[in-house]
Length: 129
Image (cartoon, rainbow, N blue to C red; front, side):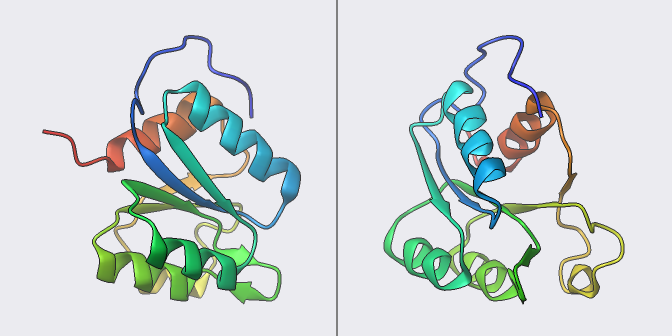
């Protein structure tokens, strides 16, 4: 991943949930999303933490790693679906993961991804008038 070449406000004012178990990737995603204008970025490394945050805070969109250690983000994706929060998967296992069958139309951002690809994917999720 690289930083954005331009500081366009594609995510201006957005509240984004990011779930990723790799600390360095998580920090880089947080930086990229703030740089693109997000108002807040809630970062979570576990399923339990992500479910708690998702249920207690309104989000405009979410970016989920499919695999979180020995768990998957399926329960988080189901929770976000119930809450009406759009999400994309950020994963290196895009096509091979059986979890994809439950969300065949979900946007995938394949690791590694450029900052522009990440911002474009998240911006595409935002419900803007």
